[in-house]
Length: 556
Image (cartoon, rainbow, N blue to C red):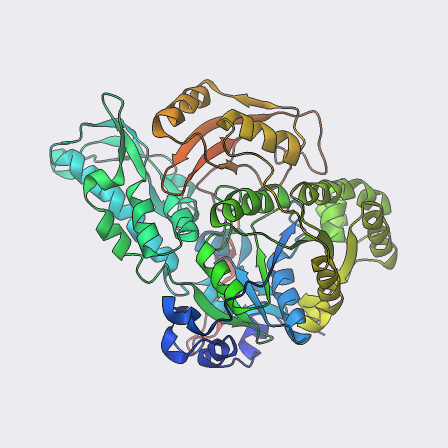
């Protein structure tokens, strides 16, 4: 029997009107702004009917990703559906998909199988326009900077020290390094610049961390745009454009309400990438969810070394959130790949490779423990997994002190996650003692060293000469007592994507530091990680199509 594709499953789902979903949360119809029948924005008044008591916050994270697949979003959705099936008032709070990887590597990012958020096609494409707002606002600031220079440069900006680039929500390696203003004086002042992907924009982080429009305006004004020729930092406020930037976010800042295939309310808002950004959904969506539900399932990007660390050390710290439990998603296939098995060998039983690769999972379990949070391991079951492999993984987790539960939410939706829901409920009964892994008042170098040693397992950190100079600049900017956002490959605990499993004897190289003054953290770029991804040899876009009557294929 041929399995239905994700888009076919999503298209066949019976969706409830979004007003009904809102009503189930105590939100009146007049307090949402519908985008059609099945999507809506939540207004500030939407909390009027909320209980006012915070629910339990559950983070879903994962092992380091591999081409074999892990299924973090799928598990998040399936777990929320399972809790919902058990009669628990539940919301799943997710990140928005980025068009770059959807059309590049992934094909979609709304879950999979029978554990999806819907309407899947809309969510994976333009959704409610949040990322377009970020792209437009970001590029407006870039245009105003170049116009200021062209019109006389009253601020005396050094054209060689403009740090604000442009962005696009498409993977395009040709735009990483560009020269603007060519063609004569009427076309502007020539200077070197480049593009990042939209989700790496500081404005994305600001959208996710702001607690309202007024806070967003304040943060936008603090954005560092560059330096004067005398060495003074210049912020966006000095261009007089903060009001214009803020008004572009008047709708984007409102969390989005949709639903899962199982009818569980879903808040989807902001923040996809944890390898180059902080990788969490918005603070506003999370706080709304905690006020409206007894159980809130959220996720953070990529493995726990990136997404979970940033969720705990940045988002929870800055927003005053205290998570209650964590789920670490793993697959037998991915662990075998971490243990040295080739991609074409993953369908064959290999207990030795599984045992070797489980070291990666072991490290992530240890890391969650360092934040004082009880952890559950969710094994996302594939048809090729053998009973011996699953039993071995359960045995290994038991030795590590973590409950291991098989999850079949891809194939069965919420019904396939009931055992996982039970395990999470059990974990919630344990006392969480949440604490970040470092003191934000420590020096930047000390904070990076702590993350590298404690979370990655590195022997230490090396700073390039450029990064050392930038450490001194952070003092000038007043950005020393802030969290640190590590930009690192997602494929390895190290900064080398080829080092799988649980590597040892390595050091982390910090090549550049960037001050995100509006977001309130310092970004440390390590290894060869890029803030504008490229496309693979065969991009996912090449397998997509739409028929004359609007039926989409290839989006998964």
